[in-house]
Length: 140
Image (cartoon, rainbow, N blue to C red; front, side, top):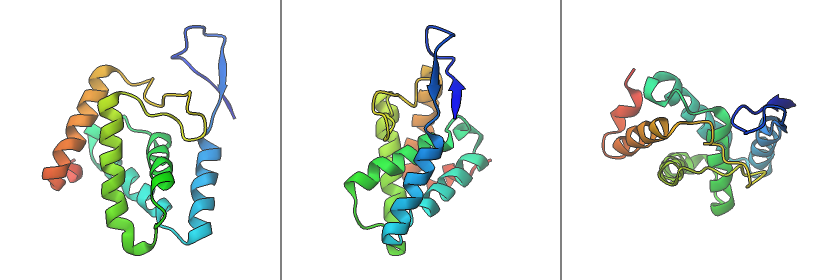
């Protein structure tokens, strides 16, 4: 799918949407090892939907955090869901602190490029706070 990319300097430039390929990669990884990546993504998406402070996070960004973690961790069994969710949360916080989330399929693409610095700070603060106060993630 080709979509306009408003964050590029030239309005005539277009880029290929990586979302279908990201989703396919996540599903393929889960099918290959009966993993819990897709379930972890569903939980992330539900948390973001419930918490307005996390509304700027996209499914693509969350998928990529999990794809990056999949390169580091091999055990994605159902028993590891809580551990992997926490690791993905911490990974997302690290990416927000750096202000960069490279696409797992095209590392030249920064998936945070469409967020303002204020949005990045708010997301990072909310997620960091959730490490000591998990109920923050469930506030609506």
